[in-house]
Image (tube, rainbow, N blue to C red; front, top):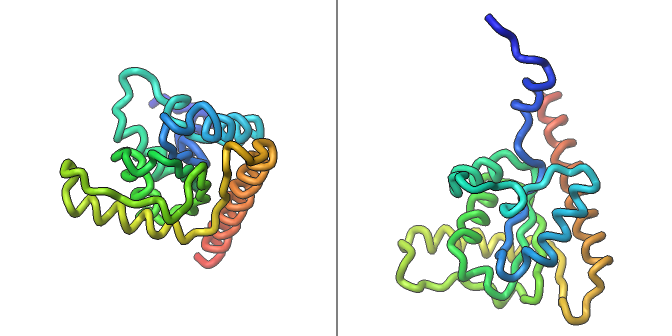
Length: 181
């Protein structure tokens, strides 16, 4: 029987990413989400951003759901058109249902402006699931950013610091749980 090299085994056992960046691409991919992904990557934090981690032929839900379930921390970048996207709301619901740490960033939007709307295309059970996740995220301490008045450098530093702190806390919790066993 052929044995796999130890480094390959470790790589296969590791989750695909440490941080999942949930965002509305049309609003944030070329600014806050993309810049945060770049900053975290330079800090050697394995992050997932759909446009950077997926290739043609990847099954959308399978790839994204696997990344969410395997991550340690989620970043939810809320923006003016966030709630119009089924994918954004699905990702947020999965992050919340799987009890991931989530760092909210309110980009050009106030938490009170985020509402799940029934446009008639989504089953009521999904709408309720999305609404619960959105309410939970809105009441999680996060960062706010106004793209017209805000300091991009400061926001990216604060966001990456928040992600790193949450990653460290998740790792400490994991170690504590291991010791209890």
